[in-house]
Structure formats: C-alpha cells, structure tokens
Amino acid sequence: MNKPYPRHRTRVLHDLRGSWQFAWLGDGPGDWMVEEVALSATMPVPSCFDAMPDYAGRRGQALYCKRVQVQKSGRVRLEFEAISMWARIYWDGVMVHEQPFGYTPFEVVMDAVEAGWHEVWVLVDNRYQSERSPMHEEYYDFYQWGGITRGVWLHELPDVAIEYVEVRTIDLGGRIEARIQLSQEAEVHFELDEKSCSALSAEWNPSTRLLTAHFNGVGWRPWSPEHPELHTLRVVLPADDYEVRFGLRTIETRYREILLNGKPLLLKGYNRHEFHPQYGASVPLAQVYADLQLIKATGANFIRGSHYPQCQQFLDACDELGILVWEETLGWQQREKQLTNPAYLLQHDAMVMAMIRRSCNHPSIILWGFLNECRSDQPFARPVIESTARLIRSLDSTRLITFATMFPFVDRCADLVDVFSVNTYPGWYECEGHPNPLSLVAPRIEEIARYHVENHPEGQPLLISEIGVEALQGWCDSMNGFFTEDYQARYMETTLNAILSNPIYSGVAIWQFSDARTYSNGYSINRPRSYNNKGIFDEYRRPKQSAAVVTRAFKAFPNQKGNEVQKASPKKHATGRASVQPSDLPLNLK
Ligand code: ADA
Figure (cartoon, helix red, strand yellow):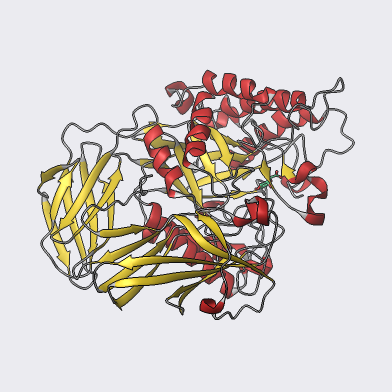
C-alpha cells in the first residue's frame, strides 16, 4: 500500500506498518523498563487494539516493539501518523518522546544513529487521564480508541535533507508558490507532474531555511468536485527527494457565499467519524474508498471530518474523488474547565499546528475547524477562539476558518471566523411533550437564517454543520415515531429541503454518515446499542430508508448556487425581526 503524500523515491524509508510485538499491560505501574517486558503477542499496525477481539473494550497500557535495520549511520526521523490516546516512544530502550493526544501526526528526530539493527518501543495508554491528556475526555459522544492507530515510517535523512514542502495556488491561471524547508542551503531540482522543470523564480531565506519558488502550470484546470485534477511537485536533491500532490483552486467568501474557484458553492454532505465496528478508528483503505463512493453516490460533495484531524489516506482519497472537506481539531463541548486551562490550550495549539502542517497540501480541504460545540456563548471562550483563529491564519491564510456552534442565537464569537456553522437538532432533542416534533424543523431553520442575517448585515456564509435524528436499522412500526427509519426519512426530507432551498445557507452536513460507536458504561444510557444511531447508513454501511431521501434531495440541488439565488436580497428573505426573541429560544443543549 502506498505511503500517503509526501512520498519519497531517493530517501531510504522504512515502512513500519505490519506486525509488531505486543504486550497487554493493563493497569501496570507506568514507568516501565520496556526492554524487560516480555512481548508474548503480536499486533498489526495500524490498528486499534481495543477493537480487536482479544482486547475489545479494554482500557489500560500496552507495549509495542518493532526492529528496524538502519542502512547508513546518521540522522533518522520516526514519523507517526497517530497514536491514541497517550504514548511514550523509546529508541533502543531510551525514551525519546511523549505524545499526550491521539489523531495527530508527530515526528521524532534522532541524530547520530549507528547503522544496524535498532528497536522502536511504543508504550500506549488509552485510559482517560485529564491531567496529562486534557484533549481526551470521557464524556465525548464518540468512542476513543487505543493503539498505534495510523501508519509509522522511519526516514533515514541525508546530510542535506528536505524537511517540508507546501504548495499554494496563486491564481487559477496556473501560478503556484512552493515553500520548501531545507536543512541547509542547497541547489534543488524540480519535477512538475514528473517532468523536470525550472522555477520562474526562487528565493532563499537563510534565517528560516525556506526556499520560496514560483511555477506556472500550463493548461491546468482548477481542482473542483466535478474535475478533481491533481498535480505533483517533486523537489530533488542529490541524496533526497520529497513529492507532494496538490490541486489548483481558490476558496474565499464573498458576502454570504463561499466561493470555490470564484463560483458560489452549495455544500451538501455528512459528518463522518473514522469508524468501523471491526477496526475502530483504523478504517482500512478499501473501506475509506467504499465510504467515499457511497457518499458521492448520494449526490454529496462535502464531508466534515468530525471531530479530530483526519487520516491522510482519507484526505488523499477526497483529493482524488473531488470531495470537499472540513478538517478540525479534537474537541467536543469544551467548557470553562478546558478553555481556561493553560495545559489544555497549549496542547490544542500544538494539535492545530500539526494538523495544518500535515494536511496543508490537500486541495479537498477548504475549511479548518476547531473546538466543536465549545461554550462559545460565554465570555471565556472568546479569547480562545480569537487566538486559535489567529494561529490558523498565521499558518494558512488560503483556507476558511469556522467552528461548529450550538448557540445560533447567543453565540459571542461568530465575528472571529469566516463561516458561521450551526449544529441544531430541532425535532429531536428537547421536544418532549410536543405533539408533532417534525413541525419544529422548518421554522428553526428559517429562524436561524433570519437571526443570522439580522445580526450579520455585513454578510457571512452560514452552514448547518450538524442536524439529524436517530434511526435503528430495520426498526419500523406503525406509529413511525422516534428511532424508526420512517421518522428519520421524513425528517431528512423536511430538513434538507428547508436548508438547501433557503438562499441564506451555503450548505449542510448531516449528522451523520454512518452509525458510530459511542459511550460505553453508564454514559451510554441515552444511546441505544452504545451507538450514535443518527447515521444515514448503519455501521456496516447498509442504507437506511433515509439514504434514498437524502440522495433525492442532494441531487435536486446543484453543487453551485444559482445566480438568481446569489442575488436574492437578504432583506426579502428576512421578514423583519424574529417574533420569538433569542432569549426565548431553546438552546441545543443536551
Ligand atoms: C452534537 C455533537 C455530535 C453528536 C451529536 C448528537 O452536536 O457535535 O458529536 O454528539 O450532537 O448526536 O447529539
């Protein structure tokens, strides 16, 4: 199986995926002399050990080991795509790194490693320990898995190495800028789409060790869902190379629209958890493609990767298949406790930086998100959202920024981001005693749009980033009530028509693509089967009744918003002040 981009042909690269020696340590002491632990089992990497039958549902420590033969003495880099939820890395028994959170790539560089056999040991812990891993909390509504959940590679680095390459579109005429980080100044060669080429200009900054080069792609078409045209740039040194894949495309906002390559976009899609009942969060590549084929077949063009940085194979596949992506940091209803905790905020910033550095070449990613459903109605959230948005902009000014709020009427942070995104569950939560919960949907959608227009006359794109109801696969009865496939199907029809036909909205991400495992123990009392059952497909990707309804609705609306819609005056749509005042409206709190 290919390594996700970046790829290397010259550099010596060891693929450490495959079978590792393994020992389950459970609640052991923590400070292990790793070389003294007997490793009596084996475990595939990547995988979630707690999704495997032998260790299903267990929380505790586990130890992994892999031997690797370094060919040439010198500097090496261990690249981990993600380990969950906490890990210590040992090189020949010596601890070299501690990783406090999962879902995120990290690297460990070791200088002066001798040629010959070496051992990589990884101590993994999937217990919730909010002191050392405040990014992971047990109350999140999705199962948090343990293990070396994504790929691992060992790079043997030459004396002069390419550290990093980022490509940005300058204009749709084909002009791109490459930012190339080198370990020291060197003469580089370039290949665009596998053909040797020269840069239009190249400038070396010795203090940042950054080479900035410009190129012109002749005859290139912009990357879009309809034409996901991809290109590669390979940077070559005598003993090193670094190949990235990218697409030519722009993303920006204009008044209430999100513009992809200058055209107003209508986002139609799903939230998707990285989950499969047999593999947990380590979803095999074939299943990733299967998911994307199913998603595309429903007429969708968009996925919100809820609620953590995504695996690179998934993003590579979205690039290829033309699916637009919102990638976000790990988070779920962060409260004062976290948003005022410096240790949490430091880790969150570190995750933002790692996510953007690893994902920035994917044309599919159009939105950076963070802090799903945090208390953005409270003053203490504002400085956090402000500084996170500032950090993201400083790292990548080419994409849009958003966060999903559950406070459409009392949010205090909307002005800090490019796109206002609302999670809302009318007709599901908080409608106990209501004779006709479905009737609550269309008015809520209308109300959110009207309130947004009135409060953002300067114009800001508006998305519904979550909406949905639970349906248990195969559950139908004559009352067609909650948890039936029928209620979900009628709900989706009403919801999607209300959102997609309302010109104020730039789109919707249904909650959610497929059923996904959530809380275990007492937390699961409100989640039948310990699953969040709001999938349009179940956990084995079998369609529920609503899949056909969603397909009809998504296919009825093109990917681009029409011109007449674009011109529609918000004033015409917003028919005066809401009859219900914001303070009377129920919050989407569970
Ligand atoms: C939230 C949350 C999701 C999920 C959903 C639900 O808005 O962001 O992760 O928990 O609600 O099903 O209630």
